[in-house]
Image 1 (cartoon, rainbow, N blue to C red):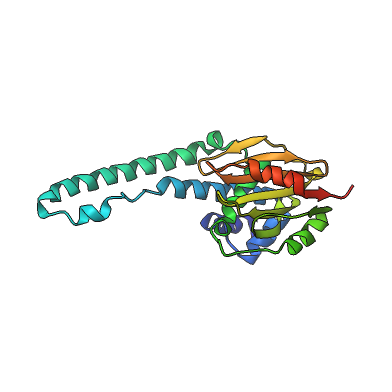
Image 2 (image 1 turned 30 degrees about the vertical axis):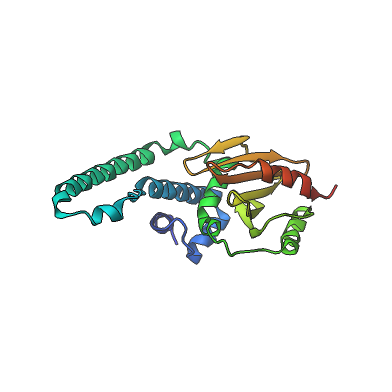
Length: 235
Protein backbone atom coordinates (compact mmCIF):
# COMPACT_ATOMS: atom_id res chain seq x y z
CA UNK A 1 0.00 0.00 0.00
CA UNK A 2 1.46 3.35 -1.07
CA UNK A 3 1.56 6.55 1.01
CA UNK A 4 -1.52 8.07 -0.67
CA UNK A 5 -3.69 5.01 0.00
CA UNK A 6 -2.45 4.84 3.60
CA UNK A 7 -3.46 8.45 4.26
CA UNK A 8 -6.82 7.98 2.53
CA UNK A 9 -7.72 5.04 4.77
CA UNK A 10 -6.48 6.76 7.92
CA UNK A 11 -8.35 9.98 7.15
CA UNK A 12 -11.57 8.05 6.53
CA UNK A 13 -11.25 6.21 9.88
CA UNK A 14 -8.42 7.17 12.29
CA UNK A 15 -9.31 4.20 14.53
CA UNK A 16 -9.28 1.68 11.68
CA UNK A 17 -8.36 -1.95 12.36
CA UNK A 18 -7.22 -2.48 8.76
CA UNK A 19 -4.25 -4.88 8.90
CA UNK A 20 -2.33 -3.06 6.17
CA UNK A 21 -2.71 0.27 7.96
CA UNK A 22 -1.75 -1.19 11.34
CA UNK A 23 1.35 -2.81 9.83
CA UNK A 24 2.57 0.56 8.58
CA UNK A 25 1.73 2.26 11.89
CA UNK A 26 3.84 -0.17 13.89
CA UNK A 27 6.96 0.63 11.87
CA UNK A 28 6.68 4.38 11.30
CA UNK A 29 6.60 6.86 14.22
CA UNK A 30 5.54 9.70 11.91
CA UNK A 31 2.47 7.75 10.85
CA UNK A 32 1.71 6.93 14.49
CA UNK A 33 1.85 10.64 15.28
CA UNK A 34 -0.50 11.41 12.36
CA UNK A 35 -3.00 8.82 13.63
CA UNK A 36 -2.94 10.25 17.15
CA UNK A 37 -3.52 13.79 15.85
CA UNK A 38 -6.44 12.60 13.73
CA UNK A 39 -7.95 10.76 16.71
CA UNK A 40 -7.74 13.91 18.81
CA UNK A 41 -9.24 16.05 16.05
CA UNK A 42 -12.04 13.55 15.50
CA UNK A 43 -12.99 13.67 19.18
CA UNK A 44 -12.84 17.48 19.22
CA UNK A 45 -15.21 17.65 16.25
CA UNK A 46 -17.65 15.23 17.92
CA UNK A 47 -17.58 17.24 21.14
CA UNK A 48 -18.18 20.51 19.26
CA UNK A 49 -21.15 19.07 17.35
CA UNK A 50 -22.82 17.66 20.46
CA UNK A 51 -25.95 19.77 20.94
CA UNK A 52 -27.60 19.07 24.33
CA UNK A 53 -31.28 18.11 24.23
CA UNK A 54 -33.38 20.64 26.19
CA UNK A 55 -34.51 19.14 29.49
CA UNK A 56 -38.08 20.36 28.92
CA UNK A 57 -38.41 18.93 25.39
CA UNK A 58 -41.08 16.40 26.38
CA UNK A 59 -43.23 19.10 28.01
CA UNK A 60 -42.95 21.38 24.99
CA UNK A 61 -44.13 18.56 22.70
CA UNK A 62 -47.34 18.33 24.75
CA UNK A 63 -48.19 22.04 24.53
CA UNK A 64 -51.41 23.09 22.80
CA UNK A 65 -51.68 24.38 19.26
CA UNK A 66 -51.59 27.94 20.56
CA UNK A 67 -47.85 27.53 21.33
CA UNK A 68 -46.94 26.35 17.85
CA UNK A 69 -45.35 29.65 16.93
CA UNK A 70 -43.27 29.57 20.11
CA UNK A 71 -41.98 26.12 19.23
CA UNK A 72 -41.04 27.27 15.76
CA UNK A 73 -39.08 30.12 17.32
CA UNK A 74 -37.24 27.65 19.55
CA UNK A 75 -36.44 25.50 16.52
CA UNK A 76 -34.91 28.47 14.74
CA UNK A 77 -32.75 29.14 17.80
CA UNK A 78 -31.63 25.50 17.76
CA UNK A 79 -30.50 25.85 14.16
CA UNK A 80 -28.61 29.02 15.02
CA UNK A 81 -26.88 27.03 17.77
CA UNK A 82 -25.97 24.29 15.30
CA UNK A 83 -24.53 26.87 12.91
CA UNK A 84 -22.45 28.29 15.75
CA UNK A 85 -21.17 24.80 16.54
CA UNK A 86 -20.11 24.30 12.93
CA UNK A 87 -18.24 27.60 13.03
CA UNK A 88 -16.50 26.40 16.20
CA UNK A 89 -15.51 23.13 14.49
CA UNK A 90 -14.01 25.06 11.60
CA UNK A 91 -12.03 27.11 14.09
CA UNK A 92 -10.76 24.00 15.85
CA UNK A 93 -9.62 22.50 12.57
CA UNK A 94 -7.82 25.68 11.58
CA UNK A 95 -6.27 26.45 14.97
CA UNK A 96 -5.92 23.03 16.61
CA UNK A 97 -2.19 23.59 17.17
CA UNK A 98 -2.99 26.69 19.23
CA UNK A 99 -5.48 24.89 21.48
CA UNK A 100 -3.66 21.55 21.68
CA UNK A 101 0.11 22.18 21.83
CA UNK A 102 1.09 18.78 23.26
CA UNK A 103 0.91 16.54 20.18
CA UNK A 104 4.50 15.38 20.45
CA UNK A 105 4.91 14.98 24.20
CA UNK A 106 3.58 12.85 27.05
CA UNK A 107 0.32 14.76 27.33
CA UNK A 108 -0.58 14.60 23.64
CA UNK A 109 0.07 10.89 23.32
CA UNK A 110 -1.76 10.14 26.58
CA UNK A 111 -4.86 12.03 25.39
CA UNK A 112 -4.74 10.31 21.99
CA UNK A 113 -4.70 6.88 23.67
CA UNK A 114 -7.58 7.82 25.99
CA UNK A 115 -9.71 8.88 23.03
CA UNK A 116 -8.75 5.77 21.08
CA UNK A 117 -9.80 3.50 23.97
CA UNK A 118 -12.84 5.61 24.91
CA UNK A 119 -15.13 2.56 24.84
CA UNK A 120 -13.26 1.13 27.85
CA UNK A 121 -14.09 4.25 29.89
CA UNK A 122 -17.80 3.43 29.66
CA UNK A 123 -17.51 -0.34 30.08
CA UNK A 124 -18.44 -0.57 33.76
CA UNK A 125 -18.66 -4.38 33.69
CA UNK A 126 -15.02 -4.91 32.66
CA UNK A 127 -12.65 -6.19 35.34
CA UNK A 128 -9.02 -7.36 35.38
CA UNK A 129 -7.60 -9.48 38.19
CA UNK A 130 -4.71 -7.91 40.14
CA UNK A 131 -2.63 -11.04 39.47
CA UNK A 132 -2.95 -10.50 35.71
CA UNK A 133 -2.03 -6.84 36.12
CA UNK A 134 1.11 -7.81 38.01
CA UNK A 135 2.07 -10.29 35.29
CA UNK A 136 2.13 -7.35 32.87
CA UNK A 137 3.87 -5.06 35.36
CA UNK A 138 6.61 -7.64 35.83
CA UNK A 139 7.84 -6.88 32.31
CA UNK A 140 8.56 -3.35 33.53
CA UNK A 141 10.06 -4.56 36.80
CA UNK A 142 7.06 -3.41 38.82
CA UNK A 143 4.41 -4.81 41.13
CA UNK A 144 1.15 -3.39 42.48
CA UNK A 145 0.91 -4.55 46.09
CA UNK A 146 -2.85 -4.05 46.35
CA UNK A 147 -5.68 -1.92 44.98
CA UNK A 148 -8.88 -0.94 46.79
CA UNK A 149 -11.11 -0.69 43.71
CA UNK A 150 -11.69 -2.39 40.37
CA UNK A 151 -9.16 -2.39 37.56
CA UNK A 152 -11.19 -2.41 34.36
CA UNK A 153 -8.42 -2.44 31.72
CA UNK A 154 -4.76 -3.51 31.50
CA UNK A 155 -2.70 -3.90 28.34
CA UNK A 156 0.54 -2.83 26.73
CA UNK A 157 0.41 -0.05 24.15
CA UNK A 158 2.80 1.70 21.78
CA UNK A 159 3.43 5.09 23.33
CA UNK A 160 5.21 6.88 20.49
CA UNK A 161 7.62 4.00 20.00
CA UNK A 162 7.87 3.15 23.71
CA UNK A 163 6.25 0.02 25.12
CA UNK A 164 4.13 1.21 28.04
CA UNK A 165 1.44 -0.29 30.25
CA UNK A 166 -2.05 1.19 29.85
CA UNK A 167 -4.29 0.78 32.93
CA UNK A 168 -7.78 2.06 33.76
CA UNK A 169 -8.82 2.18 37.44
CA UNK A 170 -12.34 2.59 38.78
CA UNK A 171 -12.83 5.28 41.44
CA UNK A 172 -15.92 6.70 43.13
CA UNK A 173 -15.61 9.80 40.93
CA UNK A 174 -15.13 7.84 37.68
CA UNK A 175 -12.45 5.97 35.69
CA UNK A 176 -8.81 7.08 35.80
CA UNK A 177 -6.39 6.11 33.02
CA UNK A 178 -2.74 5.51 33.96
CA UNK A 179 0.21 4.98 31.63
CA UNK A 180 3.39 3.48 33.09
CA UNK A 181 6.50 4.16 30.99
CA UNK A 182 10.11 3.08 31.44
CA UNK A 183 12.54 5.90 32.17
CA UNK A 184 14.15 5.80 28.71
CA UNK A 185 11.04 6.92 26.79
CA UNK A 186 12.65 10.22 25.73
CA UNK A 187 9.41 12.24 25.70
CA UNK A 188 9.07 15.63 27.32
CA UNK A 189 6.01 16.43 29.38
CA UNK A 190 3.95 18.88 31.40
CA UNK A 191 3.31 18.27 35.09
CA UNK A 192 -0.34 19.14 34.40
CA UNK A 193 -2.37 19.34 31.18
CA UNK A 194 -5.99 19.44 30.01
CA UNK A 195 -8.36 19.71 27.06
CA UNK A 196 -12.15 20.34 27.01
CA UNK A 197 -12.94 16.76 28.13
CA UNK A 198 -9.95 15.51 30.15
CA UNK A 199 -7.14 16.65 32.40
CA UNK A 200 -4.05 14.88 33.60
CA UNK A 201 -0.69 15.02 35.28
CA UNK A 202 2.66 13.27 35.00
CA UNK A 203 4.56 11.69 37.90
CA UNK A 204 8.23 10.81 38.03
CA UNK A 205 9.07 7.74 40.10
CA UNK A 206 12.55 6.34 40.68
CA UNK A 207 12.18 3.53 38.11
CA UNK A 208 9.33 4.71 35.86
CA UNK A 209 7.25 7.68 34.76
CA UNK A 210 3.47 7.76 35.15
CA UNK A 211 0.84 9.76 33.26
CA UNK A 212 -2.64 10.00 34.83
CA UNK A 213 -5.75 11.13 32.90
CA UNK A 214 -9.35 11.61 34.11
CA UNK A 215 -12.48 13.62 33.37
CA UNK A 216 -11.88 17.36 33.38
CA UNK A 217 -13.58 17.92 36.78
CA UNK A 218 -12.44 14.65 38.36
CA UNK A 219 -9.72 14.69 41.07
CA UNK A 220 -6.53 12.69 40.55
CA UNK A 221 -4.99 13.11 44.00
CA UNK A 222 -6.37 9.90 45.50
CA UNK A 223 -5.15 7.65 42.68
CA UNK A 224 -1.76 9.38 42.56
CA UNK A 225 -1.26 8.86 46.31
CA UNK A 226 -2.34 5.20 46.14
CA UNK A 227 0.04 4.51 43.26
CA UNK A 228 2.96 6.08 45.12
CA UNK A 229 2.19 3.82 48.08
CA UNK A 230 1.30 0.58 46.29
CA UNK A 231 3.37 0.55 43.10
CA UNK A 232 6.85 -0.87 43.68
CA UNK A 233 9.75 -1.52 41.33
CA UNK A 234 12.76 -3.77 41.60
CA UNK A 235 15.93 -2.03 42.74
